Length: 181
Image (cartoon, rainbow, N blue to C red; front, side, top):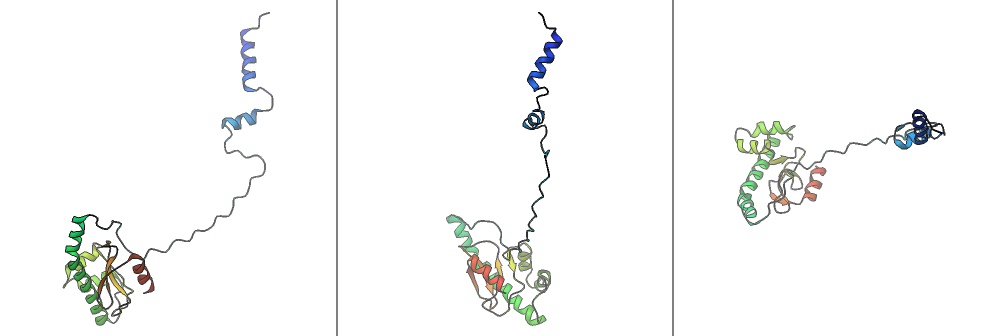
């Protein structure tokens, strides 16, 4: 007995696809055809926890590593007196501003206008973010940081205090001093 070719093809197709055996949904889910389809009651979404924005970092530093190697250390040491002198002058001008106006500068631009004529190189260095100002600093106080270098130097940041003394301060100590002002 010969089975016609068409009937054989139908039987073969039904046998491969599970024709009418009730496993269609399971087979389709297994093949990924019903991806995302949910059976039964949908589960409620868990409440989203609001993330509080982190406060901005008080320390404005450049992400450049400290100089490594003999040549870079010698070069940094050669320019250190010049940078310390710049910081000392930034401190003097800050205290002069407070003495003249009776208050701290309200913005960096306000301070820069004050020093632009007499110290244009300092104004440019502050605009170029070589030095960062702390506008909340207490003038004439040795416990307050007026400005600091944004590049690391010998494990610390060169900084000027309210009494115009200049010294290198470790990062953790500088953060602490900037948040207490």
